[in-house]
Image (cartoon, rainbow, N blue to C red; front, side, top):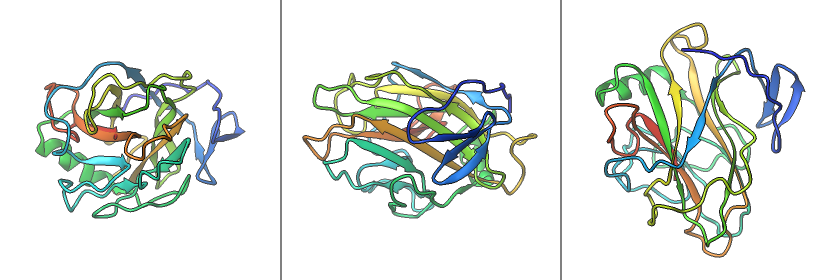
Length: 235
């Protein structure tokens, strides 16, 4: 996995313990090096709505594979801040705000990608922003190694209002976030557990169903994969 030295300071919902550490979920994660993630207003191809695996969602996912757990934060409708880890619980579960969930076995994720045609083990995440004409803000998104407590991939310091609904309909991602790489290397070892983290601010409050969610979409190429093909999406 390619690693780029991280030098940018972390903001909001996270505090820097040192220049090389970050605190998420009350625990310290090392910034020895990290793949920098880019958020682009590119609507992922393919059929995204219900037939792909969700990572962090605001509602139950009836089409989700029973072997692929996810966070269901419940679409309360009164949250303006949504800070969640993923959790590998079949049928979905809510680990709680800024609370570490159950990690995915790295081998499980790699096998999932290979089974869906991605032998390079690189993927993107689809972000579905359903709002009330007030853009929301993706402040940060991380892929973390839960075993070694290191940051693997990071999107940080998101600009205010950087995610607005441009692809109407719940479950249809509006943005693509990537690129993630979960191949084995110096930062990911056989048996390591991986976990995702997302920080959404200015979340829509007027309608419970209009939230920002993340789904795992498809491989970087070929282009059109169902919603967790090589990219997960916050949906």
